Image (cartoon, rainbow, N blue to C red; front, side, top):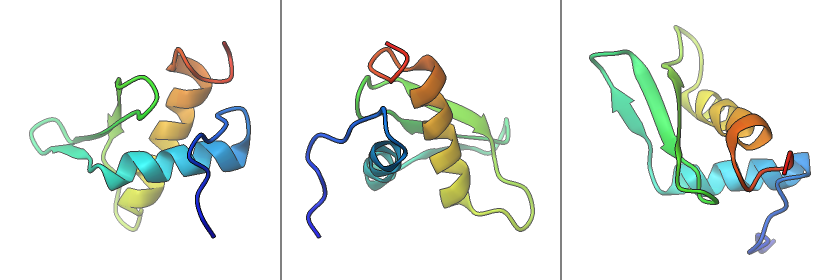
Length: 80
C-alpha cells in the first residue's frame, strides 16, 4: 500500500501517518534533561516531552508527542 503523500491531520489515520513520517527523519534524545523530541513534518517545530519510562516504547512515546502536537500546537493542525 502506497502512503498518502499529503496526509490529513484532521483524521486519526492522517495523524498516524504524519507521526511515521516524522520518525523516519529521526528523533532527538537529551540524556541530560531526560527528554525526547521529534520534528513536525508540517510546521518544522519540535514536539518534545519526557523520555519513556521502563517498559514503554520510544516509538509509542514519539507518536503520542506528535499526535498531541498536531491536535493542540501545530499551526497546520486540525484546530486551524
